[in-house]
Image 1 (cartoon, rainbow, N blue to C red):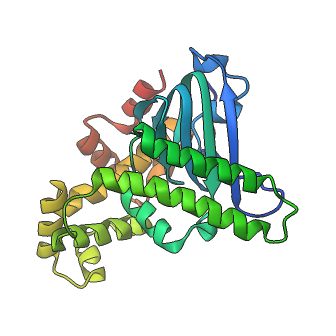
Image 2: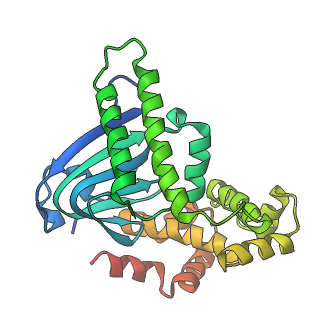
Length: 291
């Protein structure tokens, strides 16, 4: 078993020119066990990135774990991973993948908003037509990325990569798009989720989220339950427990330290909450999932 770190590792972009954008095409051969990885050392251990990352699998198969869910990607697939998500590569077989990493500052603000709203997402398989268009956009981005001497290098790279991201976003939105505009319930739920993502370590009560949205707690709960099937309290608890799971698995922090990091000075209360939501104690979860 790999040695756990004190906190979840964050793999930071290596960007000599300070553009905040990196794109590369990589080929790896067969991998049956994660212990055999040598060339992908950074990806074999669970980690986060300090960027939004997009992976376009042109060839082969790859298995990745994202927040305790395992996914297998095949040729002609894409995946978007949000900076908050913890992930690692567990297996691959003769893959060719193009990976794009980009910071918030370089993303088109409209695309950044949409990415925040759709995350988390699963890998998405595309038919030959849409994937061919993505391939063309990827080739253009790779060519621009190599033209570092150009006078407008950063602007060209930013525009090219945002065009690629728009195509990826479009594919995800087309898959998830319901007919017509979002309902009032869906709009309020979306606003609640965005606030929850920003504030879950400090704001724990449904009434406080309702106040932020200038609606009653009862109406917020009606909207969220109608749109998701879960109450506001359950959504808050699930987001907190997801982060707790990440820290329990990927770090050496004690349960008491994790409770404090997530905004709970009352350690016994946090322990009871974790057991209530997951059906096991925090220590039992750590022991079970580290084997």
